[in-house]
Length: 337
Image (cartoon, rainbow, N blue to C red; front, side):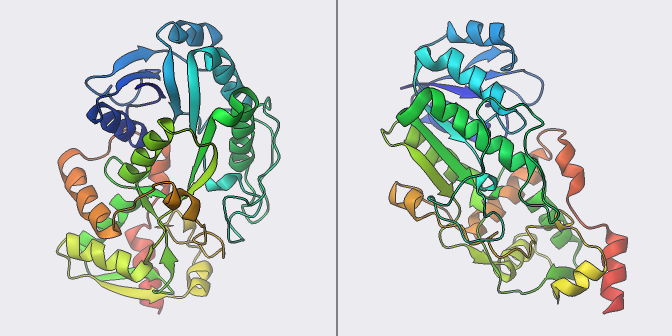
């Protein structure tokens, strides 16, 4: 099996490259060579996927059985369309890493794989779309939906779309789980978002990588929601963080209304906390039926802690600074209770 991996140097892309090599596959990676290191054993090709001449040079390294695209997060649909058009004659399948943000109902409504998508043309530029007053829909969601349409327009029934919610695990560049681990280590009274029994559905990066490769080798098509089918409660999540770090910290569960009064930003200042009804109501049964197998959050937490202690932040990504509550702000809220 020969695959082309767009990206391939950090987090999900790196996990896919490592697992593909472990399967004995031949792996070509394509990225700009600016962040992260190429995985030993791949055939690295460096270039800019928004430049047609770079893509044509890449195409000369084919053909491939499949393309796995992990690097379209910040691209306009027209850039995705360019890559699919240039590479269509050199690859049989396209596995596209998308997001649950492509759905019209995200994050307010429970979602299935058949929920309606946002409407965005496949040749749209980076200005297409809008963000709602409550933060949904988002320009990001429109752009990713347009990217899916671009892939469909060129690859048709040979296209597969993976739509994860939150991905955690070793190599995480956003900083959600590392922040909770560091906060657990500090101990003391830990501000936690109520209700403690709220179920969340983060999925391990290694499980997403395995499923992506399974789809690259398959003949299926269409979209798959990628969320943990069982999930865990926020209480269980935080308990596992405390256990992994040998912490004596004590969670203090604070109601959303109080957090809002103090201006705590959902999703970022308290990572994984969001009050919209559909955030953690994403059905992944189709992916499970197709072979998605998710390890427990406890394993993800322990393995992330080991990686974090050994390697630290993998890349200097701007989103890292967005995550986590400042100690002085946390203390002020806890003191007011």
